[in-house]
Image 1 (cartoon, rainbow, N blue to C red):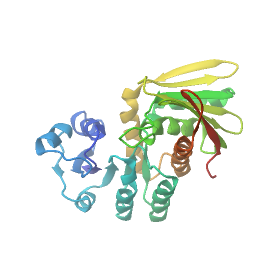
Image 2: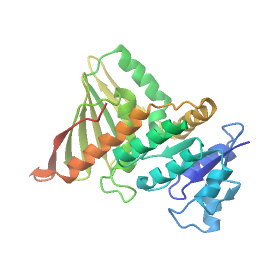
Image 3: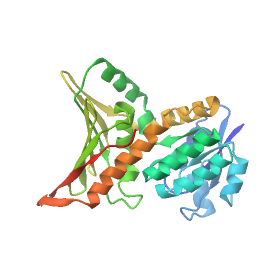
Length: 295
């Protein structure tokens, strides 16, 4: 039995994943086995309620890495991902890093460079970007030209879970999946906690809209023809974990590392401009444009 370890108590992702592996048995030969967490204090009863039939709880991260064949890092906030990822990579174990993959471009580069140097497959970020529906949308974009693409979801620029990166990582990574990592410029406007970022590419612009007033993930393509897609979030854990298992079996990361790094760079550009914003008229904020990520 291939044993997967989990670093991180906080949030509900560990609960969902433990049930996918251990209760629903979606992946034959794989088990969500061990848990280590210091990001949230839980009683033993709370651990047992949150994680479905795991094999044990580890007292140190080194113990978890040693007992596991691969590791999923689910800690909150994202600033903690780099040191844990480097430990797993050094041990030579395949690793999944939950959203946000990182909160700085420098951390993202450090993770991907370490994985490349050690020859360890690395994967993670937003599971929404791995929905099968996005493959259909990208295929459509290959057949027709769309000068504008909009991606919308909920996100709080002041979230205690890790500020804008925590949920906005979904729209940033969907943007990378559909349009690629080589954006040229970003312009952002803000109205309260609602943000609209225009990400300019050579031949198209992606409009990323985040608000607290929706739980839907929507992708809209605007060209000679117009298409709108509501993405089914219930499938994201299965689709994302399927790619993680495929990476374990092939040793090949399913997402180019450049996309991980530049999705973090995009969010960093947006949040940097938020902090430097000037109010232009009551209730509405225009944030200066920012040149895109490195190639």
